[in-house]
Amino acid sequence: MILRKEKDVIQLSDHFDYKRLLRYCFPSMTMVVFTSIYGVVDGLFVSNFVGKNAFAAINIVMPALMILGALGLMFGSGGTALVAKTLGEKKNDLANKYFSMMIEFAVLLGLTATLIGFVFMPNIVDALGASALIRDEAVLYGRVVILFTATADLQFVFQSFMTAAEKPRLGLRITVAAGLTNMILDAVFVGVLRWGVTGAALATGFSQIVGGVIPLIYFASENDSLLRFSFTKIEIDVVGKAAFNGMSELMANIATSLVSMVYNKQLMNYAQENGVAAYGVIMYVQFVFLGMLFGYTFGSSPIISYHYGAGNTKELNNLMKRSFILEYTGGVMMFVMAQLLARPIASLFVGYDAELLEMTVGAFRIFLFAFILAGGNLFASSFFTALNNGPISAVISFMRTLVFELLSVVLLPIIFGVNGIWGAVAVAEVASCILSWAFLFTQNKKYHYLISK
Image (cartoon, rainbow, N blue to C red; front, side, top):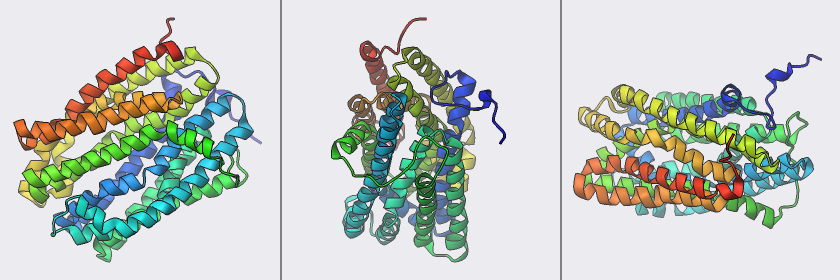
């Protein structure tokens, strides 16, 4: 047997400099970006092969699908923080028990969401303000995608737990496999067979099966990770604790989706279907560009939870300091890059329509200012989740989206017209940054992460 050199093995218990931190988090960062990219492929194929109305139909129903699929994200983030903290306390058997409960409960909730979503999808689409021109395709896409909610929830859960299991590279490989599945099936179902929005929905669903079932098989089998799945009795108090801790991610997802609904309704009033299509392009691009920053929070959270459980305040200070520097630096880089690529990216989606292209590029130029502070705000919320402080994390997420952004998207258009809609998220990020740092300073007395050298 060939043993790896100790310096090549990165464990949660290590001290992390920039190089070690990025090495450990890089698979998670790549995983989120790749997930975002293969989500974008749906939009590319539908927009170019089916048309802008079908593209608008997908985008108007997407917020509801995100809400119904957010349960996996909640149990993934909240459960990972609980499990990693328990590992830091050297209670490995208990950590595996908690891990198994999260998986079982996520599947149960996913199946429940499937039933509710399928039955009420026409009502949901109507409530979202879909016009008669796009209603039927929105219902069709929503009903097909919702059939795969349980496996989608599993995919979200395992993406988070892979880092706690010290297997971020395996998580990346599974995500790549799921992404390639989606891309290939999009090309076949939408590009070749011309199945329209149904083909795009099926491609997404089958990729979620790959992303959710393969890691389930891995963790249920003998493996060399820190975690192992086995059927266990679900304890409501433990599941509730994880859900309470992860509610910030659920709230952020729900709030983002609700705000997206308001965006779409405002855009239908100010710019009709073209506005909804332009917003859809921006959302896809945001997922990809902020994916690196969000992926970093994914990868670093279990490390923070572990050292919190181990009582290592010096390493908490080290992780916090380096993380914010990385997030803000990355935000500036993403802003500059996105500004340079705004027109080429918009052309990929809507280059066939000159009016829609110009609207999309103009919207990009304003919207992208939000990138500068977004990564730091995401990390601040994630940091408190990792410290098992779900309420503060939830307040940051809730205020960032459902209060600051919602108020901006409702009030700014009154003054600036449609440009106020595009600038709403940038205004919200500034307010969120102030709130996040207020919490970071006031909570230091409890956690001692702002220690001096």
